[in-house]
Image (cartoon, rainbow, N blue to C red):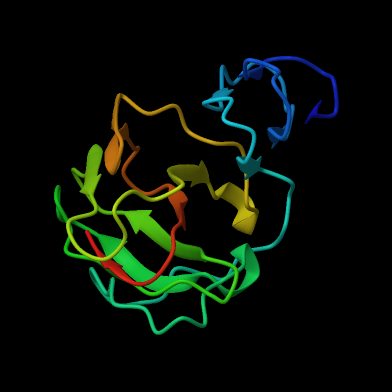
Length: 169
């Protein structure tokens, strides 16, 4: 199932073998690209849910498990580290969300889960402008345990991870 408001700009793809759900804000002309691996279990959404402010701290990436929805995303503050050290504790359903503002000069975030689950189900970055959980940002590179994404200084983003158990990345 793929959805947006239909006014163009977003590209979404999966191989159609069932189970992929992807939705974008469809705001037109922004060139967002979203894709699933087509394994039948991905849920990727940019459905307009409100997100909290990122907070006033800097690189506060250690969560406590109370961040299982976009609306309860962990408040990271201003992100400044290319390879942040993150302690990801997901909610009961395996989802963990982190809201952050890209700091001055911060143009890329790279993540790799190194502890906990063998492989996360997925690791995504979503746009967070306007305080809304937005469309997935296209990864520059991907690995089974993470990837890298281009970000714009001063913009809000939401890291979304789906995994079993806690992980460090």
